[in-house]
Structure formats: C-alpha cells, structure tokens
Image (cartoon, each protein chain N blue to C red):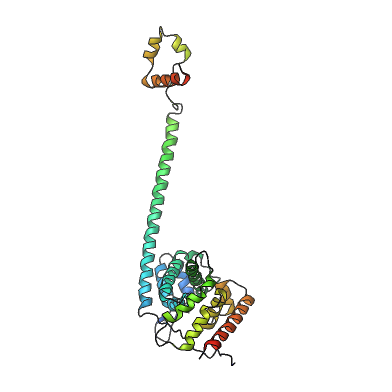
Length: 113
Length: 196
C-alpha cells in the first residue's frame, strides 16, 4: 500500500470561522476586562475601608486601656471587712447594688444556700 | 503610544506592532487595554485555530479563546521577556483548551479517552464543501493522544520550531521530536486506511 504524503496536503481547515467573529470577540473580551477592572477597584476600596475600621477599633481599644487601666472586671462584691462593719444582715443587703444582689443570688443557688 | 522601529506596515497596509511593543504595553496599567486589543488583532485568528484544532467545536473554541484573553489580562504580570510573547499566548491557549477537555472528560476518563467523541465532532462541525482528505486528517488528529496532538498541530500548522514548542508544552526537544514522529506515522496510517 502506498504511504500517504502528508507534506503535500493543504494546511487549510475543513471548518469555517463565523463572519465578524474576531471583532465581536474583541469587544466581548474588552467588556469582560472592564468588568474585571471595576471588580478590582471595588475589592481594593473594600480592603481600604476594612483596614481603616480595623485601625480605628485598635486605636479605640488602646485609648480605653490607657484612660481606664484598672476598671476591668465585673461587679464588685463587698469584702468581709465591709460586711462585718454593718450592723445587721439587712444593712448588708441594703448596701448591695442590683448587680451585686444578682451575683449573690446566683452564688447562693450554686452552693445550695 | 510609542512604537518600536520594528513596528511596520504589512502588505495589507495595516500597522504590524512588534511583540516587544505589545509586551511593554501589557505591563503598563495605563495601556493594558490597548495591548489586549493589539494581541487580539495580531494573534486572535491563529490562537482561535490553534484552540479549534484541539477542541474541534466552534462554541468551545469561542469559550476557550475568551478565557485565554481574560487570563492574558489577569496574569499579565507573570509574563517574562525571556520568552517570546507568542509562546506565552499559545501556552495559555493550550492550557485553557486542556482545561475544557479535562472538564468534559470528568473524573472517570482522561482527556485521551475523548478521541472518539472529538472525531465524531469533526464531520458535524465541518463546512459542507470540506475536502474529504482534510476531514480524514482532522479525524486522525482527533484520535491522537493529547501530547502528540499538541506537538503535531504546533509543528505542522503553526510551523513552530521544537524550541518554541518546548516553551509552550514544556517537554524536552527529544521527547517532542518523538511525539511528532509517532503522530505523523499514526496520521499517515489512518488516512491510508480510510481513504477511498
């Protein structure tokens, strides 16, 4: 059987490319790129706002620590000495704030008292 | 826009911009859109045919070409002047074509298993007046393993040197030569067997 001569064959393709295909494609690509650029700008803006808020929150936290360095913690409970100075247990309860009474009630329930 | 001395007028009278000028524009954020337009003008058609030879169907080639150009824009910072612009473009187009074929093959098949389905698409996609031998050639190409197909197309249709094909496909020159040799043999056998 005679071997086929590939080099003598035309380089043409048996398909067709639709008319104006490349022009339409160029416009579509440019439009996609424009969308991509807008998206990039939006992401960049969002990142800047996020950094701005994060910096402001950090600065506020540092400022709070500097202004009220020792006022961290929950409601204070009267210590033993202040309780002993009171005339009666009723006075102790009267001297306690609502928060302190809440804590007392919670502790009483916890220890079954 | 500044142009190189290598930018010249071609036989049709339109300005042919050098790859160096396009690459420079591509790296400049203020001129990137102009660069993409120039790439489409200069390489749009050859890239389309390169993709079409891989994926066969026009609709698929359209999707892949669009994705290729979007990637050219997105990953322009990865372009290195060490390689010719055309090799970089063909590399992106080849990778995008393979991506589409891999998606089509799914998890259970490899791209090479798509040969029969691509071969069937050749006649479905062909123009009515297509030459029978050219159709047989495309069928034979469709049945080739992917590596052999890529090397054959780039060498036979695009007239690329093995060095350029190496930049696009990545294999060594000797491996590429072997792939081309096998591809030619298989194509000749197929056409000889099926020709009337």
